[in-house]
Image 1 (cartoon, rainbow, N blue to C red):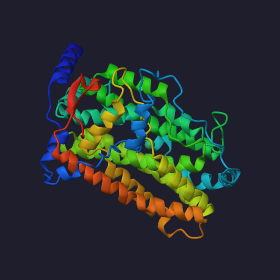
Image 2 (image 1 turned 90 degrees about the horizontal axis):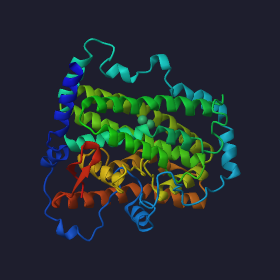
Image 3 (image 1 turned 90 degrees about the vertical axis):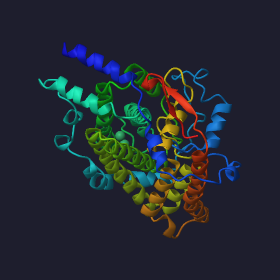
Image 4 (image 1 turned 120 degrees about the vertical axis):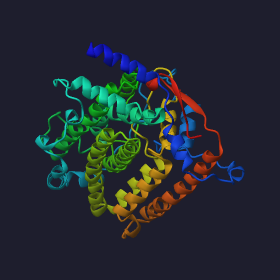
Length: 419
Ligand SMILES: [Fe+2]
Ligand SMILES: [Fe+2]
């Protein structure tokens, strides 16, 4: 009887409309009067991706982003990876004992790690169904657009096999045997094991909430893992660690914002869940950015050029090939909702760049080659440019009626896009 009640309650919850989270935020923002003068500006769609709007347009023009032309299991890579310069591999090879002493201590022992079960109803407990009902009653208050952000974040976490595969493309640090005892091998596996809890926790919460279409959510995850990702790292560990520094901070910001919003919405337990995941991301960000700091110390010009290379290519978000079997632009739509809700925005993208520039003391680097000096100048000017574009796009968005999009994840209910 208890399970029947649970099912009925899930069905009821799934079909109830909720006010939008972005709508609540919009009330707090001042209207702008200069929208017309801004129409000549192309809107900035950085949002959850660092793939720039131009690049994404090109992807559509060449049908590379069209899943009807591209089954998820076909290779998406546009070019063969370049050879990593020998000098860079020598720098990486000199870092084994450094990694042992400076990287591995940032891992948490399993016995002291939180587990998803710590934050969820215990199915072996007699109070399980009461706890689930309580969870569902709290989750009932979550707006649809907030749920889209949470599902997108969860699917991004669930595609973890892709990230471990990607990590093992980095020359000089890959786990050559699957159980390599090198500090890099140990790090890759233990980092993956820590990350594995993130998708598990969010998945179980969303399942128990009864608010989402789990079949469509899981189908999206299967497509995404099957599709992989193309982060333009070219097997280069310098590029790879710049990418992962950026990426971990992006997920720290995103989960931090869903935690803050859950608190505002009165779902304190979900706030704790998103917050505990964000704190892991922060620790991982420290690890990867520490490696890049060391690379700047040992090879400032080479690292500066890699930083420029990754900023020019734009940091492609890991779930950029997201697909649910129907919407060819699912990732764009999810990113747009995240931008509207303030979960991850173009301003966040620019602020991550600023943060890394400061952390790595990029502005005060000396002794650079002339090419690296030009890269230094380019990179240091970039955040201000992105902030300016983001502000213009934000002003335009405030003056326009948003488009709406149905998401299969939430039973095809519609939510507002950013623009
Ligand atoms: Fe994560
Ligand atoms: Fe992470």
